[in-house]
Length: 77
Length: 162
Image (tube, rainbow over all chains, first blue to last red; front, side, top):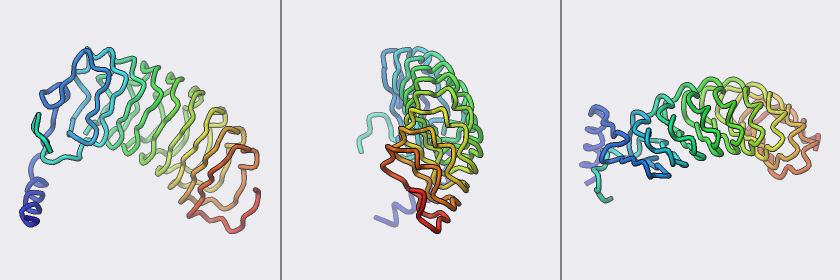
């Protein structure tokens, strides 16, 4: 089991970086949202698609590297 | 990873912005976020404190683990309560004498040789300057509300000035 995990990690390290985009299905944004919190979950290349989010009061987009590979939308731990 | 601060033009109500551990090099496009109270830009690649002049409501500013060489351009942040510039390349505590609302000053792991410039900051309850090159315990005798003083891993040979 551990060996397989090691192999998967090694393979992932060699793969090209996969980004998840703000405003996509995985990281949705909407005009009504007051908070956006994707810290430590996704790897996001840029801040985007917040043009209509005029009510936003909290934006947390930190340490966007934690999970590998990126979770699919709706996937549970 | 975010390399540039952008895309927040239409979000003027943001009061809490966390962008730590990205690859940001320049503090920019934040000037309109005048409601910001908490800004965390730690663990980035910022070389200069700038672009914060209009954020007069800011209370907590975290800039640790960047590439700063100087404390500067914070004069207008007169609501600031917590300033964290730890783990940078700062050689001198300067340009914060007017931030009299400051209660916590964090500057561990820099290149400081002296505690200075804090005399007027009488609301300070915490000073954290561990892992610097400070040689004497000085510059803190006016800080009557000081509760926590962290100076481990410096070059202080004698306890005096308290």
